[in-house]
Length: 163
Picture 1 (tube, helix red, strand yellow):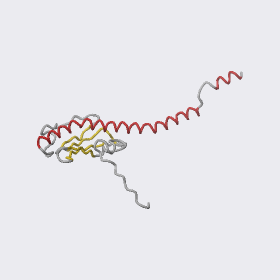
Picture 2 (cartoon, one colour):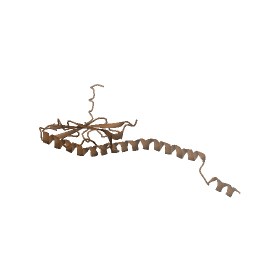
Picture 3 (cartoon, helix red, strand yellow):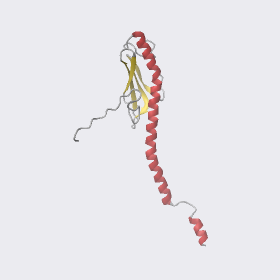
């Protein structure tokens, strides 16, 4: 009879064991889900930059023809009037005097869309064109990291002597 009793006791998990497994899975999910949403938001931000890249070419062609960015506006001088929204560039599209603005599919943790502004500037004379990226898309956690894709480098604060 002792043999039957020991077989029955080893057939399943106890309630305590199941609760421990559920607690461990909960802890893993609480760490993994925010990391995944940050990653997917950064991917949407990068994809939005790739989708807006052809528009930068249109602005450059316009500026080359006109000799200035003034007048390089959506719907004029070969620059498209509209941009068909996608999952990565969701709206708020505009180009005024060469400056491209849009809302992206990348979001803050609160679900607010990150915005992007691409501003062309001449560097080192007329030979080099530099695109500066600004807006809420320059976000290390959920968008484009500092120093990448034209977002400004993070400025280190100098240490105070004696403090």
